[in-house]
Image 1 (cartoon, rainbow, N blue to C red):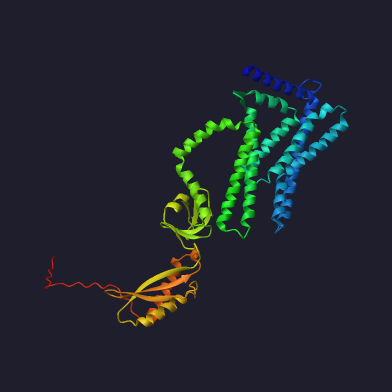
Image 2 (image 1 turned 120 degrees about the horizontal axis):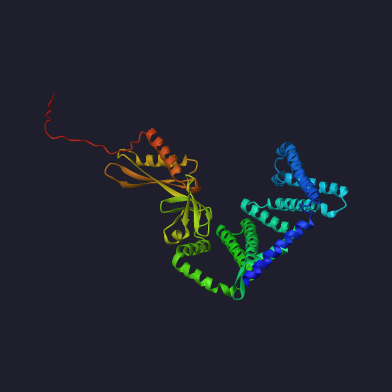
Length: 443
């Protein structure tokens, strides 16, 4: 039965193509060959003229576009129109050719081939211009080719027969029939709905980020929830539009759940951990954190990981689960002020009161060190070879690095102690030799 339906559909397409050739006057008989060749010549001449004129206009248009500054939207529109100028000229010359043929011949069929070519070129011009406003290059080309294919089949009168042939090639599953037509419709519907969901989610995310009253974590959480809801709605809406019963997905859903239980534990764990991080506000974009040996500023909270940008330019992608289960140092959790310590030692001959004043002045001389709270210096230990002290100071911008500001304080401190002739002790090694040494010379 399925074979007979498929053969009938293919035969219908063949008959439609034959009628199409007859209708458009395409024939290799002696009476119609001249008109067929003439229409093909008109199409070729229109294409050649479009190429030549487009080349002539390309340089002047480019010169005028380079004069436009500060209006990126207008420039983008002009770039799209410039790329489509050849197709536009092709359409113009084809319709001019149609007008000329109409004046020469009284038979409408003797210009149907040129009319079809002009209609196809016009459809391609409109579709190509509209698709170029899609930023994704692959998606833009896919939309353009798909839309023009459907338009071309409709213009040529082959769309009903093609639909019948695609619907005939299929398999019956109880109450649902899977055919090439259903697959094609599903791809088109899903692509359109997913694109709309992503575009809507990005638009909503941008609007939410512009709200100043919300915290950074709440902004990220709200944006991700809206994107997830839109995507889920798009998927189930697409299934409903192509006629798939949701009850048929019960077995598939069970298989997916089993796969998650065994093979996707880490993925699900990271997803849930990401939601927990956003809700408990333990970290947020802009925070400076330390996880293990990783130190940097949080750039992005993704569904599976957190992007931490280090001072050396490297970007670490830390799984969300690690931030939940491991110890995390958040340098800016409650406020951006961070206290840093610089440990040093001086000799026992030094004036400790003077050393403390010099150390505080050295820290205050560094630009990034805060004046309030003021820097302090304390004696911490009388060790074997030195008196140890700690210099403590505060900075308000740990995202700019802490090693560099600590190094600047060390330099200022070293210069101040050297100028005051305060000795910084260091270990001395003395070798004691017991008894006389006997030196032998050998030849």
